[in-house]
Image 1 (cartoon, one colour):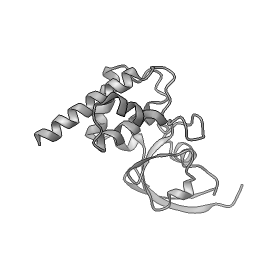
Image 2: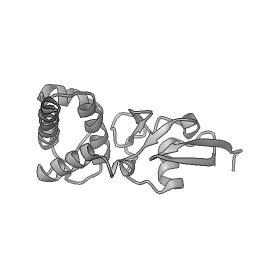
Image 3: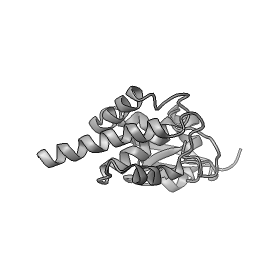
Length: 163
């Protein structure tokens, strides 16, 4: 067992203090030490997007971030988005459009979609596909995923215009 280092950050809105091995990834810490299994490990090279979490408000590949690099950060996993109305809309749209077939990529897709819509993303299919370019799905062919995100983005635009 290697030497462990102290770590403290905010995880899903709550403070976390732990000791971690210096080379442990954030994804492994979340899955193994915190039982937050929505953060998936696919390629472990930062290309599939299954490990995406929000780190200080932006999507981050948890497989590429060392847990120690999260020191002082605010990390939000899919589990931490359960009370978010926009995430609920995205999840419902994914279900309605059958965009979550096997589910392996879904948490990363939802994290990307949330960031896209929050940043004022439009229902433009090409823009959505561009935003999803760091996420791999082997089941759906992306059509249903793009449909789901486009519908939520359009509803968000109308909601913002009405406000």
